[in-house]
Amino acid sequence: MVEGLIPMIEGCKSNDRSAQEALYREYYGYAMSVCLPYSNDRTEAEEIAQDGFMKIFKKIDQYNDEYGFKSWMRRIFINTAIDYFRSNKKHSNMTDIEEVQIEDFDNSIIDKLSGEEITEAVQKLTPVYRMVFHMNVIEGYNHKEIGEKLGITEATSRSNLAKARNKLKEVLRHLVN
Image 1 (cartoon, one colour):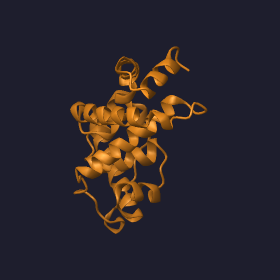
Image 2 (image 1 turned 60 degrees about the vertical axis):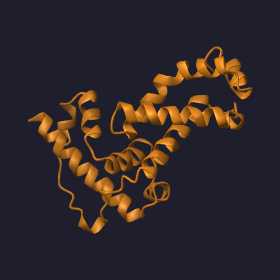
Image 3 (image 1 turned 30 degrees about the horizontal axis):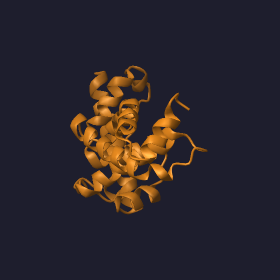
Image 4 (image 1 turned 90 degrees about the vertical axis):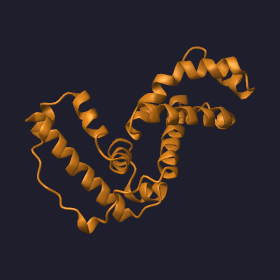
């Protein structure tokens, strides 16, 4: 555990504002690294992170120190991002799986790009495509879980992932050429 984490957690449990501020300062960068892939821009990520920290402070009593604190926080930030997404009804780009056509892709293109370029390409996806892509590819959610969390069908989740991958391929090809 991070040195001083236990006193910060105990302070947060008793609503000590200085402990909450210390926890916020310690984990703000981490929060942003979790929230940015789920958001359209830095401002939206900051809003999601703020909401996430509020939930952490409210639910800190539920934290079990047998598990990693960062893992527990990560789950809260991801769920907060999903809630934010749902509340803002950004489902306008969802289509059913039957409408999707998957094309071939030269995987060697990825080798020619930096991590930053790939991250920027993912950020160019529409909110719903980025959300489904990130939940499936990065976080490991299956389509049933994604559907349940986002209030969509499994088929729509699959369709959105396929479209996200196609769009990402297009953006990556453009970057390489």
